Length: 93
Image 1 (tube, rainbow, N blue to C red):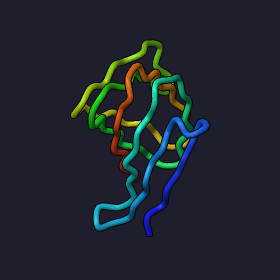
Image 2 (cartoon, rainbow, N blue to C red):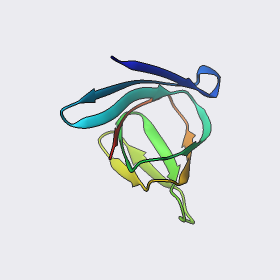
Image 3 (cartoon, rainbow, N blue to C red):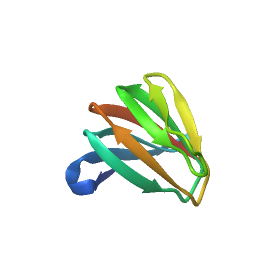
């Protein structure tokens, strides 16, 4: 069964799935600033748009565009600045 999630008053929406590759979510983010916590390792790939990311323990923000992936360790928090509506794929391990 697909799991539909909504965060930050509807500004972030995702659909979760489990298949032979494991657990993933596909979603969209509206313009805004967000902080997320992780419970598993997350492989975030930007599908379209861009995400400006402050990874745990990083001192500088880094921009990720369509086709680029960043990895977030389990049990941490990371911050995102979204300047345009952006779609992403997140795979969990």
